[in-house]
Picture 1 (spheres, one colour):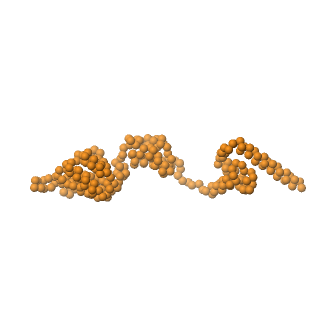
Picture 2 (cartoon, rainbow, N blue to C red; picture 1 turned 90 degrees about the vertical axis):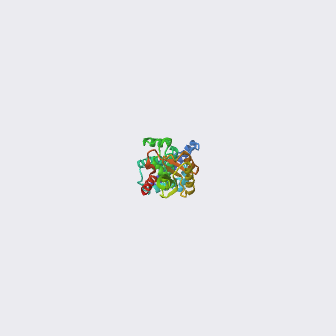
Picture 3 (cartoon, helix red, strand yellow; picture 1 turned 45 degrees about the vertical axis):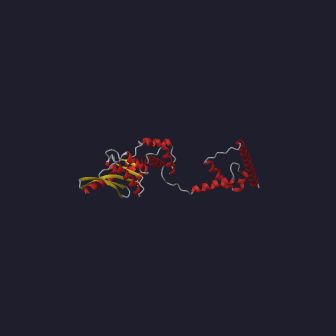
Length: 276
């Protein structure tokens, strides 16, 4: 009988304590004035663990901070994370190193890209990097900003591969009734397919002849050439280069004393001379 009395008194005491805490919680909520209560992850874990033991029916009577559905959802997420094993993936240091390498490659392979363009490309790959960080990475690597950044020749070739061709002359000595005459033959080689086109041959490669070469190439350009490499020969005059430009073909002249920059055409020209 005494045990039942004590148990009943304890139950009543717990109900009174609980009722007081509920009312105190409501008063505190009113003091917030409708402002959102900021909870940490640790707060959510503790509330979810307690809420699950009470059950939905009891939660409807006592919860004032969040709804019972929210508390039970937190508990489900807590249980799911318990059985989600940590993935041993890429460390932060490796990600930072990857971002640095990507930034350097983008700047070197795309000399016209500024900090904003590189930032957008990195963002497309899931890396959010600030412009100042990109500038610092490139400065550390010794790479200047876009307007001052030189374009390596190999990078230029890779960027336009598939739509780039090279032009050059080879000379042939021909016996005529006037004696030995040198004929100059203009050819174009597509770098990707190695397809060679003979555009014309003449002993007098003057401006009129070169203008005709431009028209011949524009009509015969079935491979869709957009960039044409030529050397510093005076035959590729400003007028001739302007004719190619009008036909939608960009002319790039090789650097001075750099025959390897036009290696494919130079090799073909040298081979033609040996076969004569």
